[in-house]
Image 1 (cartoon, rainbow, N blue to C red):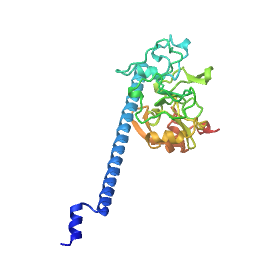
Image 2: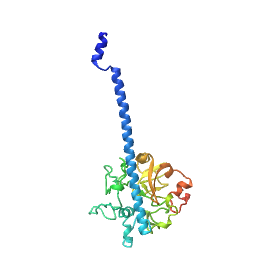
Image 3: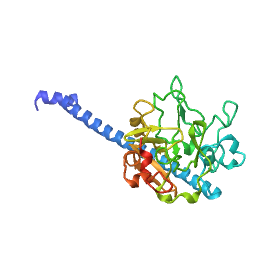
Image 4: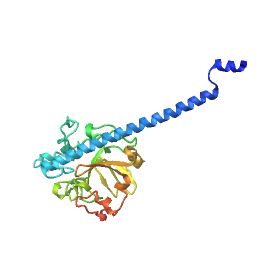
Length: 287
């Protein structure tokens, strides 16, 4: 054996061999990272699906017990006649959840200025948690945008309050209150839902139209006024579940629908998803 060969064997790996080993390790690390990320995403999706299912079940229990769907907002003067409605749909459903614990109203908040489980609110120094119930109200894949506008609240999940556009074909009530034109009582009767398996009830808290998607506080709708409340809102919303939304329908089954199906399709089947009379109400999409 030549001296040079003996020296190479005693010295260990050559540079080429080391590079090959490093490349193999890098490939394996990338594969493991991808698998770990995929597993995390699937776990988040599964938790979100379970959350939406539980909220949908609570909604069905409320409708069965009271024969109406909880109104979106209850004015103070109407609460004495309908204590089961609480102050809004979120508190009403929270009362149906056996493990629910509403946040205490401890002087900082009142029943008027605590509308529900706000997960984040925009403040001058960035988003902060506020009155966050957690549990089934928190989508594990939702994140606050860094540029959330001041005093703008966001929740993980929203209620099909209005139906399509600016109509009143949703579940949140059948009239408007003068205060900010909020949808309120009279409540929608359970028998008013023509196709429970074909109407959106609760889902990831988005609204959108024509490719624009916003994340909102407690609402869920296809809204012609959706324009992006903060920069890059559509991309931020799409990052939650890969441009899809987890939806509980009025019969309590859960589906994952694409943003295109929810906020861009204009066929009758897509538009009917929002309305309790199972009609497309195309006129409500007009600007």
